[in-house]
Amino acid sequence: MKEAGQMQNLESAGAGRSVSTQTGSMTGQIPRLSKVNLFTLLSLWMELFPTVNTAQRQKSQVKRTGLVVVKNTKIVGLHCSSEDLHAGKIALIKHGSRLKNCDLYFSRKPCSACLKMIVNAGVNRISYWPADPEVSLLTEASSSEDAKLDAKAVERLKSNSRAHVCVLLQPLVCYMVQFVEETSYKCDFIQKIAKTLPDANVDFYSECKQERIKEFEMLFLVPNEDMHKQILMTIGLENLCENPYFSNLRQNMKDLILLLATVASSVPNFKHYGFYCGNTEQINEIHNQSLPQEIARHCMVQARLLAYRTEDHKTGVGAVIWAEGKSRSWDGTGAMYFIGCGYNAFPVGSEYADFPHMDDKQKDREIRKFRYIVHAEQNALTFRCQEIKPEERSMIFVTKCPCDECVPLIKGAGIKQIYAGDVDVGKKKADISYMRFGELEGVSKFTWQLNPSRTCVGEQNEPESRENGVLRPIPPGEDQHQSKKLCLGNR
Ligand SMILES: Nc1ccn([C@@H]2O[C@H](COP(=O)(O)OP(=O)(O)OP(=O)(O)O)[C@@H](O)[C@H]2O)c(=O)n1
Image (cartoon, rainbow, N blue to C red; front, side, top):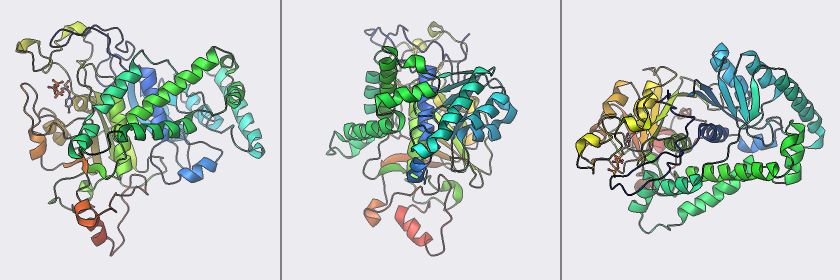
């Protein structure tokens, strides 16, 4: 039986499914991200959670690490290391003995201090990206003795523990990169730029992608092959040092980096585009204040990654819910914590042929998908792992505009903010319509657009994220300047 919903049908990965379109002319595979690849990419992406101390961190011997905690194929935690604590330690503090039987996906091989605690908590499986480990083996000679000792201790903990500790890498399904490239290029965010700035250099997307590939290769791929082999030997993966295993490993790593760069550039850091509120009347209270742009973009890319697991062969949608606690914590995500995530799919337990897959262009209404498919937001709300607290700022990131079925659900659940694309706003299709989003009140809406305040103050107006997701208290005298910056009264 499938575990549909939040992370359903993870094992089948969708490959090999026969699909027919409304015209019945296409039969082929739906290239869906396998669960291992999705969790790998999410762990790498968590490592990149916007933070103040990137430069400082690069010098440190302990590498910043991302972590995905999965229980019964459901994501229950997204974490990354902070200045004070490694990701594994943060997960331990947050989940405690609930880590029992969980699967953990690390963007680097964890250090012995993290490993001993999570093994002790009874985790089921620990998977990691086979690059430079958390206690870096690529730092200066003076400190590398400790790193080697740590790697040895990790090996010992690995071989003597009940948990299965293994490398996290699976080759991508055929056409995955091409599929991701095409769907990223067609996504709401790129479309919006193309529509509103028809003269924009059409290559901005490819340029952004090239930059990101370079950036991610530097971070996640050991540049020198001999050095990489040395590291693999020190971390107990000597069997991967011979060819063809070594070249396959490097190729798989490069493919995933390319894929992550492709997805990340679909919500590009382009000119003055970002998630802004169009409502100038909005009251200046904390729940209405926008997140820093780089954090909003970061969470939207997570939602976009989830969209690649869709069961709708035409439109993939992903949603992630985060909340912000009352104060900044020792967490690498600042005060932000993960509530839930999902993508659009048929109900839990259903098989591919159980329900119709046609869209609203199909004349026969009985064979349309809309009454059966569960939307990304609906799955994220259903399979959330934390309660939504009314006193906290909670926010949902959706890759498409919430439809009329979802808007009241989001409001009813007590979510304070929606970040979304708005290409479909105001559209009424035969079965699905997007009329209510525009009229929605009581929830702040941040849609992808050119910064409206640019017309007031020219160039300088991107909200900065110097404080890791936590709203910086505005010093007296500065608030006038701040609200001028956004011209929205929401900062
Ligand atoms: N906020 C949203 C909006 C849509 N969906 C999903 O997106 C699909 C519908 O997308 P849409 O583009 O509106 O309709 P299609 O018929 O797929 O495409 P078209 O635009 O050509 O009509 C459905 O599977 C629905 O579950 C979703 O999960 N969450």
